Image (tube, rainbow over all chains, first blue to last red; front, side, top):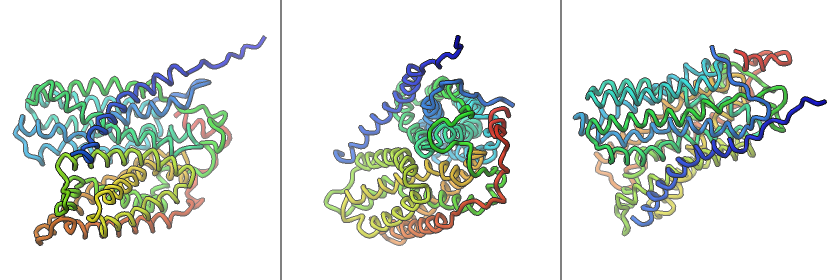
Length: 42
Length: 442
């Protein structure tokens, strides 16, 4: 009988980790875009 | 000494970039220090030079700790380094909170500048060699993601800190509370990096293509004795100086260039221009660094330095004739500035291998510190002298642009002189498995 087990899937952890860093970065980028548009409207 | 955390079977390499980003997005806050300057000046009665001290000391400490702490980072691994970065960076804010609350400004300089600055340096280099080992097939992209985070940190911190000061108030208690919240929040945010970071198992390559542990390997001690290291030092220094040449005076520069035109640039439009430059800086870090994986490191620096010099020339000759042309050229130069930062670890890996690439990178960052002094000095000093000489508008910057072109040409030549490292500097090839031991059981 084989004792080999497949490694656990890390998909949930990967999604969580990218969301952890992606959410604040998205906030920063949103604020940046708001400010950058002043170049064309200001 | 701690043992670097080795990845369990099935650990995904895509967990390492967010670990790196959680550190770089945090320490990138340093570039948003200016948000705290006006409140500190009014609350503690400081002038502009005094309120800049914590930031300046932090940048000096970044360079010093990256240069001198690199070998320790290599020896103890990324988790140790990220933990040190977390403790130093967060306690820097907590000490500053105490300083603001008790109105002892020296505590803010000590906390944010000295203690926090050590966190910046160790944090900056902490994920570099680990990322390169996980992504031997795409080292430029991997380090580009992390180093992009350093640029992104200020984008997050700038509006966040400003909103916090608005809520808590700009007096010394409000600033203290803001520092406290920063210290605690960054500690929590960086914890993800500490928990997730792993060094790859090395019994088989983590990706198809070249293994991270094969090829030329040079120690940090030997690397600084090679002409290649100093050529790259010059390349980085010149590229960063040229970028700072624009970044340092971006807002007054665009205003001066079009002061006499029919559509002068307003203050808010100039602020928008500065924000756009930050975006180009960030995009360059990930975009150009990833491109270097396809066209090679030497070629991408030919673009940064050669096309950068031509772009500066276009601004100098025709910049005041067209606003879109001026903006486009400035964006290109800033994207090269960011790209130069992000591509250098992969260039070091190509030349010196992964053996102590983090430590070598740390030593090379002294070029950044030098450029940080050189760039603003050239642009500000020349602009002041030109103004005294009665010049105005775009002619204030003609001479500094010529100097920047010259510096970029020097960098271009230095890049051309880069050759493979002589075998006398190589670390003797280890027996099978020995390299793994060097990196995983130190």
